[in-house]
Amino acid sequence: MQSESNEPLLNTNLKAILVFSIAIVIISFVLFKNIFFQSTFLLKTFGEFSVDPEIAFKNNKPTFLEFYAEWCEVCKEMAPKISVLKEEYERDINFVFLNVDNQKWDNYIRKFEVNGIPQVNLFDKKGNLISTFIGKQEEIKIRNSIEQLQREAESHEKILNAEFSVIKKNNNNKVNPRTHG
Image 1 (tube, one colour):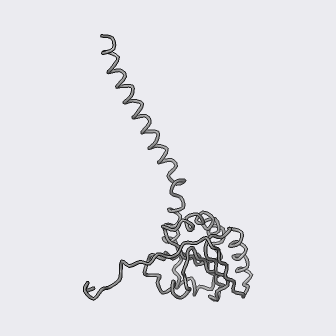
Image 2: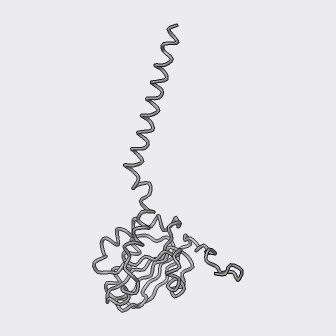
Image 3: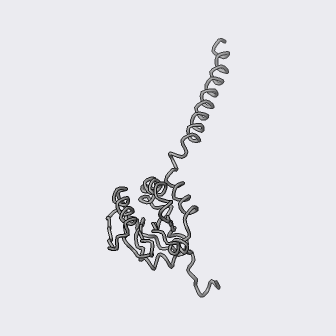
């Protein structure tokens, strides 16, 4: 008879522990969501707060142009480093971020022969291409090139790292004669 009276108490305790555990997980997720999703969040904000490329190439300031995609793991990995550079240099340099999945930027993708991402192009204040970085890069290498930009070096350098994401072919917007549109 005593075991019957303990059973509801045990169920109540298990329910309380379960609710408490779920609450801890939810609170942890909310508090630490920036850590879990920081890189993806940074990539999205890059695109939202980017200088328009037409303005960047005409406002007599050097330009940092990055081609990226939100699905690109290397882009996500580099995002915090690029964010630090952006915060440090954005007064003196245009920061332009173009998502390769947005067809609006297709002419720039073709013009700068983007075939792997991330791709960073650095331009002097006259719009002359100074450096191109393709793939994963160390922050110091990009920082040195940005500082060189400020000194207005005129050489063009292409730095290719084997660690990059190949751009995925987007067939969503192909027109078929039978689709009427």
